[in-house]
Length: 304
Image 1 (spheres, rainbow, N blue to C red):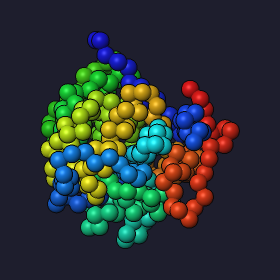
Image 2 (image 1 turned 120 degrees about the vertical axis):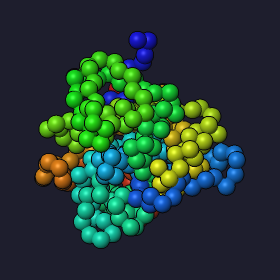
Image 3 (image 1 turned 45 degrees about the vertical axis):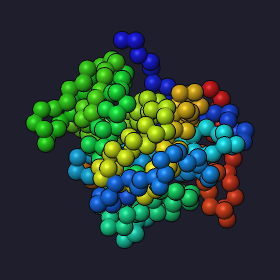
């Protein structure tokens, strides 16, 4: 159909690192939108930015989560994306909870704080995309193409008609793309949904506007559908760097290894030692200042 195959390699239960690494959150504040930039021009990033992006299903549960890390010039290191399921157990403000339930917390930085405490990294802020916000992002980039590996039947109780997806290259727009990325199939798992979301998110990233002003407008238009705990300037800078890395094939991405301890409608999982190491190595530049940065070991770094 004259389309490009997605460049994001989904690495389940393992770490993908490139030679560039060796060389060198969100909240449930549904009452407000993305914080507007105080100026009309783009503000270049002056510090590393580590964002937590959450994609919510139709009930407001953050079924998909991704840590997006970018570094400003002159570092020029590749953007990093680590995907996490909503069932991941974390330390919330009121005690143990799952990452997926943090948007329901009255603490607007619950998810950001949970990620900081769980992985010992300094998370700058976050943005939560509800179903309509994710649909809006997909439409804002003109739709996306996904190579669907197998036929899918996805129930949509609130719409009556299910989403039926044939195998092969398929074009998704708005709501259909959001549902493909956030809803479970009968008997499906959060890991399967996370894999679909990662493919969708990579396509959104690579198709984002090149102009900072247009990208700023995309986030502004999401309004209260995408509450954020950081500024629009930070979002624009981080997402534009992620776009450039994705288009250049230089992004570092991984689905973080977790061990499922409870499946079903209320899943729960814990990050494994390998998963913790994955996050520590990928985001060593975002470690607190009192922590020694980690470097990849021989069996944790590969050159594509």
